[in-house]
Image 1 (cartoon, rainbow, N blue to C red):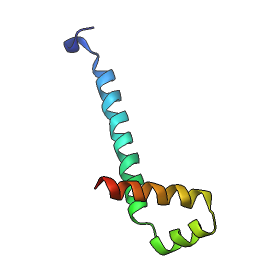
Image 2 (image 1 turned 120 degrees about the horizontal axis):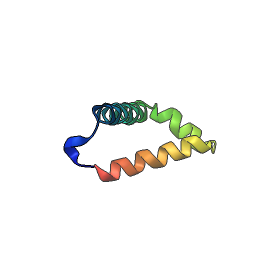
Image 3 (image 1 turned 180 degrees about the vertical axis):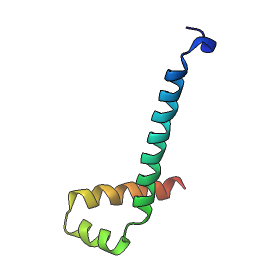
Length: 65
C-alpha cells in the first residue's frame, strides 16, 4: 500500500489514537509531579507498594533531568 493511497479513515484513527496516548502520558506526568512528597515518604516508610513504585519512578526521573 502506497502512502498516498492510505484511506483517510485510517489516518484519522491514527491521529485519534496518538492524541489519546499523548493525553494519557501528559496526565500521568502531571499526577506524578503533583504528588505530596511528604505523604509519599510516609507511605514508603509504611511499605505501601504503590508508593514505593512512585518513589522509584520519581527518583529515576530526577536522574534523567
